[in-house]
Structures are given as structure tokens and as C-alpha cells.
Length: 297
Image 1 (tube, rainbow, N blue to C red):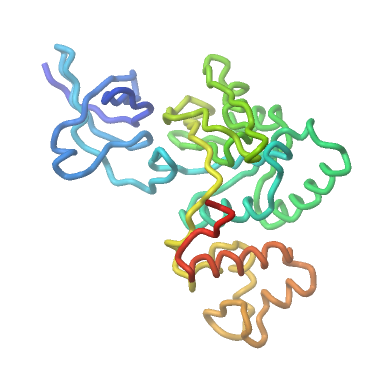
Image 2 (image 1 turned 45 degrees about the vertical axis):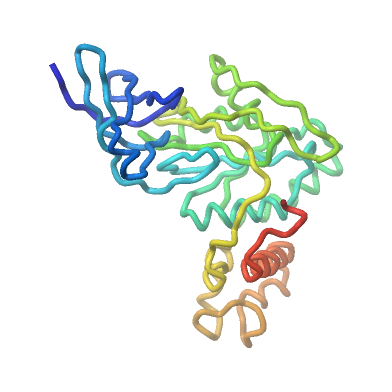
């Protein structure tokens, strides 16, 4: 007897797709038509499956995706928990702005978790906290401890929502997963001090039940390619620029040399963080040049 069902792909291993349905996890293979159409089902996809009582189950249809992000890819992401380390690797506002710009471009909400705070002196940590106050003020939720993350995520992840961890390699994503899911054994990797970045310790994507939805772990990456963004749209992905631009004199203001620019006025008044504006200019140049800067390769 053959029956149909649908669910979410929660794991991929050796060509098999594990699909969480309303009642069970079903291991399936993808129909050959996907290869023919050059479409590869991905973790996070909402799919239709065909279940055979004889044990031959097939993934037969991928429903339309909201988005596709990450390496390896993850589909239908609702929210990103961005893990930024205080040290090892060193905290970087420039890297933070790159991540936030990327996910703003993708239309995905972001919360920020500062990891490894206990490894930094109080004076240096206070400076990071001071910087993060600005990001909190413009709309990003900030977490400062694993306990705070654990206590809140179970309430914040809505039904069927997919949250993913992102951040520079070695920032502590796998350690955080271990603290959230005691039955998940992620390898935690040592930091390469010479490169000030971590070795990749997670090579597959899996979804784990958390709250009413799912949390995914993905490999960390520090070099984000922003060059596909259209340069005239970049300012819209800095959320406080977008809000302020309604008071610019010219519609479509790029916040460069235009007269009566509200963004530049707020930068000069100290109400928009100068480092944010400087990073905006750097990313503009990167997009115009069509390539990543050498220091990010």
C-alpha cells in the first residue's frame, strides 16, 4: 500500500533524506527527476513524500522555498542566531556588520550571541558591551550567556520555524549546540592562533527540535560574499539607514555626497555609529570592484 504525506527535511546522510512528518521521521530517497531538473532537495525544505509499506519511500516534490542560505545550504530559514566571540577569534565590528548586511539582504531576522566573554578582561569586555548597546538600540536582540540563550530560545522558536546558527569559525556554535541539546554530540574544534580563526568542525546540516520548531547547526565561515548585492540597494540593508533615509532630501539618496542627507547628519551627530557608516562605504567599494578584499579571502 502506497500513501502520501508531507513534512520537513531534517537531515541528509549518504543520499537519504530524513523527513519529519506530523507523526514520524521517515527516511526517503529522492526521485531521479530531481537530478534531471537540476534541483537538489535540501535540509529545511518542505516536501511531499511517498511511503510504501514495503519500505521503499521516496521524496517526490519540493515545495516553494522562502530562501536558501549557508554552506552547505539550508532552506526556509526564519531567524539567525549570530554567534560572535569576544576573543579567539577576536571580536570584530566589521565582521558583525558584514553578517548583518548579508542576512538583511536575505530577508532573515537576526539575534546576536556574544560567546567566550569569560576569557576576556573586564575592561575589554565592557568596550564590546558598549558597542553592542548600539546594535540593541537599532533592533537586534543581544544575548550575553549560554544560559540566557537556553532560557529564551525555547520560547522564541515558533511552530515549524527554522533558526540557524551562523558566525565565524571557532566562535563557539558547536559548543552552544552541545549546551542546548545534551544528546547532540558535536565535535568542538581548537582555534588556530596563527590565523585567528577556527577549523571547521561541522560539515553537515541537521535540524534539531527546539521550542516549537527547529534549530540547525551549520559550518562557520568568516568570508561572506556581498558582491551580488546591487550597489544602489546596499543602503537599504543597513536597517537604521533605511529608517533615516525617509528624511533625506533626495529619494534614493546613497548617503555619500548628496546635500541634506539625514544619514550623514545622524553620523555627524553621533546617533548613527561611525563604524557602521565606514563599513557601509567599504562594502560599497567591494561591490563596485566586484570582489572580496584580500584581507577577507
